[in-house]
Amino acid sequence: MKIIVIMNRIKIYFTSLFVLFVLASFQNIEAETASSTIASGTRHFKAVINTGVPPRARGQKDVLQLRCAPLPVVRVGFIGLGMRGQGAVYRFTRIDGVEIKALCDLEAYNIKSVQSELAQQNRPLPDEYLGEEAWKKVCERDDIDLIYICTHWALHTPIAVYAMKHGKHVAIEVPAACTLSECWQLVNTAEKTQRHCMMLENCCYDFFEMATLNMAQQGLFGEIVHVEGAYIHDLRDLNFNDRLKKDNEGNTFIDPNTHLPQLTGYWNHWRLKENTEHDGNLYPTHGLGPVCQALNIHRGDRMDYLVSLSSNQFNMTAYAKEQFGDTSIQAQTDYKKGDMNITLIKTVKGKSIMIQHDVSSPRTYSRIHLISGTRGYAQKYPEQALAFSPRTHSPMLKEQMDSVLKVYEHPIAIEIGEKAKAVGGHGGMDFIMDYRLVYCLQHGLPLDQDVYDAAEWCSIIELSRMSVNNHSTPVQVPDFTRGAWDKIKGLNWAK
Image (cartoon, rainbow, N blue to C red; front, top):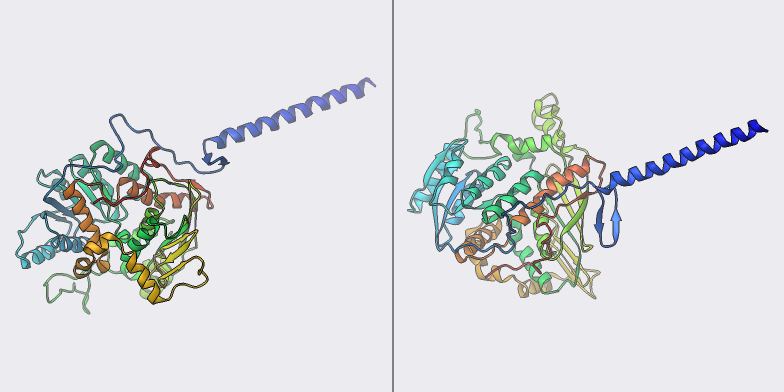
């Protein structure tokens, strides 16, 4: 009998220990996940990767609706004179109240190409800066107001930060930053220096995107619920091509008109290296920028969290084998970038965003640009379409759609659209972008895009990579405004 009592007491003791162990384990699990818990309304989600928001340093203040002293004449230094940079210089020669003070590049023939164009226009020739560190000298000049950056991606943030620290406004080709660290560097430097930092997201100035933005602001779609964007563009030829075009004998091709080399690829294959080393959405802003403006991101709503996945990589290897042979270095390279990346984003106010990225599949070009609301719908690719309640089963006929687009043409497009089409640059949207940048600087107005746009849109690069590498785990999108995302009510292009 005593033995039975003792055995029962031992059983109760060990059972109690087990229960205490289980309870302690649950408490530990909750403690470990608490740091990665985010709130959305009254619901809480666990197992979310939280990237954190560093506190604002003393002396910094936000640059929402930043206004700086008017610059009647905007003095510009261009850094990076490849395909994008040369086009930018040409467009700036078509804008009044601009002085081009400096040209900087790694290659002498790029500078000569631009100088040749300026000479033909009988314009003053800017100072030339050649070499890897030459851009610092441009940023240090006292007679430059704006640094216009068109280098390869790795230099975008370093140049922008250095320029702002030397009192310059900066305009940066996309993407403005490639990592979260770089995004925060741009934000913090802009806040410390109170300088403008604009990413040159030209797709926000496409005529259709501007018209649908105007429709959204006029309430034509009702409350916007879902948006989509993309960058689907077969870039394999550019990625694998040499920087300079070669003739049949393998010599650098010299253009008979300009007597300069002709560019056919990316300098030092820098974009191919990005596809080799990284997965995720490497280039989100063309599709994301316009739909974020329609959703008033950080002007009444903000991106909360995302999930992302990528297909395996097939097309880069297939193209390399076809072009260079099965045993070539190109064909044997391990390209980490999956062909198609899909990233889904939820906003704090419950809106959904889908962004796609594919630069290696044999597909027609598309940015999708889809806006879906409680009263209507718009889409640009593969074909332009508009539909509004109650007739939403089929899109409008072309004549009716063209009429609606005319009625809701954006005021900026009405103002400068014809000249933009004549000057060119992706159908004119590049010119409208540059025109608006100069206009706002000349009049001391807030820019159409601010540093928070640049950081938010570019943060998707690393955030999508984090999600892909962790089996599509949700990742929190940092609030780069540090709580001020609802301070401004709606996007306004200043006039």
